[in-house]
Length: 88
Image: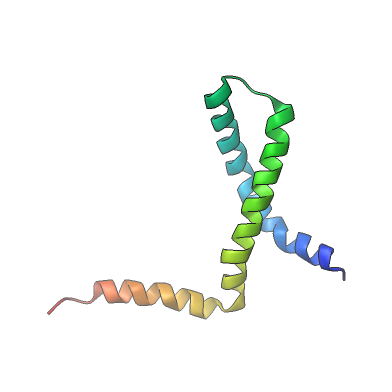
């Protein structure tokens, strides 16, 4: 299987999860700055920002969680346990 097919498959869920929040953010920010909507500018801007955010989420969250979920979850539980211990 080609590298591009593998990367686009891995990117599909982060892109799905982040495209709507990125659309809302860009739309709101654009309306705040310019007072109107322009789909010819907002559409490509949303696409670029959503792809970049998805790549970052894939790199710094998804791959870490998929590589060793026990290590990822253990780090969080150690913090919770450390906070729950009473001070002497």
